[in-house]
Every structure is written in C-alpha cells, then in structure tokens.
Length: 206
View 1 (tube, rainbow, N blue to C red):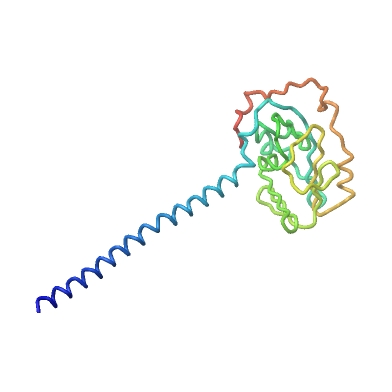
View 2: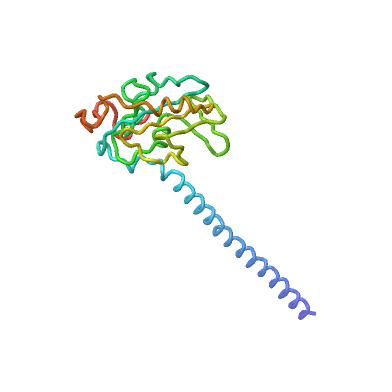
C-alpha cells in the first residue's frame, strides 16, 4: 500500500515539475519577442528621421538664392507675411520677398525648405498641398527649372526656379519659369555667405 502512495507521489511530483519547467520556458521566450519588436521600432525611427535632419548642414558653408512660387486656384499664395519669414537659419525667404529663397548651407534640399515652411506636399495619388492647415488637392504642376522632378530631395542651387501650381496650368507654369532672379541676388553681388548670428542660432526654427 505504501508503495502505491509512493508511486502516486512520484507521478504527481513529475507532473508539477514538468509544468514548472514549461512555465519557465514560456517566460524565457517572451523577452526575446519584445526585444525583436523593440529593435524593429528603433530601425524604423532612425530611417524616418535621417533625411530631414539638419545635422548634415553647416551654417555659412554656402550662399545662394532661388525662386519659389505657389499658385492655388489662380492666386499666388502670400508668403510675405511675418509668420513665413526666417523660419530656419539654413534656408529661408529673403526679407519679406515671398518669391526669393535664401540658403546659407550646402546640401539644403527643396523638401527640407518646404518642411521648414510647414508646407506638406503629397504626390502619392493626386497632388495635395497643405499650408496653414488648409489642404487643396487635384491635378497640379510641380516644376523645377522646367522639369517635373520625381523627388524634391534635390539640393537648392543658385538660380533654381521652383513652382507649384494647382490646378495644373501650363501657361502659369511657363510664366514662372520665364522669371529670373533680380540682379541683386546673382552671384556677383558680393554678399557675405554668413547669416547674421543676431537673427537666429544655427538650429532655430519657428
């Protein structure tokens, strides 16, 4: 009789021990899954911020001017207002002149300039442009120096002419592309490449 009790006890102990080991194995596998998820999230975040980071720019490393236009429903958007001025020390509109972009660093792109102006341009399906929380969508012309670029991750170069016209108007686009920088903003004007430090610090953006 005692041997029966002993046998039952051994079986019960084996079952409990097996369950305990199983529980330990399960708990060990969970942190491994969490670590993988955390790593995936980290990679995604680093890619998302890499292109737009201003850390690749050196203030004063370049100097140039370009033309910039946005025309919505037949009217030019008014970028002469104070809220659109000096939004970045790397690239900004020139002293209340709504069509002249002034850059102070190498490698600054048109996409970065739009970002500093809080202008969102989505061309994934139809073209949508959002300015000051107002969104307009439709068939549009997005033209840089007479071409329709696939990406705006292009460096802003001296004399560039960039225009967004919605809805599309070949006549309006041609008018903008025919414009040229005023003589005061051409390379031989003798202007200093350094932005006055009293205006903005290198990483300022408002």
